[in-house]
Image (cartoon, rainbow, N blue to C red):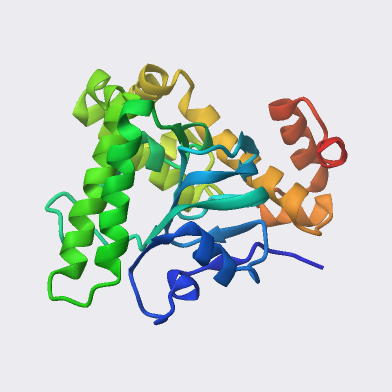
Length: 289
């Protein structure tokens, strides 16, 4: 009986069992990782750029069709699974959460990119034609550099990967999201999202988070409405619902066990909360999926 998701650290995917970054062509990587259990989580950033193949990919209940020149960005803790059809190839990038922090003055630099936000709807990018060869050239250089043992290997990989991320933001105009918001408000929102990720099982009121962020609950709510079109309270509730859905579908736990795991005092309160948010009871959601 599976009661929790497998959580893989980057060492599981590293031949040397100690790397903070892995850049490889996808076909041989996939062959070496056939024993992985799906769905699963990572504790590192995971990116796959397809040049060949088909099938489907799910990230936190968002279903995507795999096609050439699609790239998927997955942040730590997201749950995902693959269903491949035919021969599959491309590039894979794995890097630890700390990989860029010693290199960049701004330790939160990656958080400016919406595709690293943990929002599944922003995780998939269809690369426009005129950016495809440029993206492949960058990743080919990265694959070759990853196989090098020279003194500047790690820093060169950091530069190449940052170049790739900037290209993806430019290709999809996702950088406009950041430009449209004031830098301060966007920083507050990202810090709020990170706090929710750490505290949502215990703390469910916007007032608690606003106090830590040194702003009023009303200001926090205004920022969420401005940048995401939703309330601060809904952001907290959506995170609880997402975890409930993950557990209902992927784990062999009863609804009562899930309710207590999510820190609800009783099963009936959890069922009422879940139905209010989704329109379905937990059991109906599980059966429908």
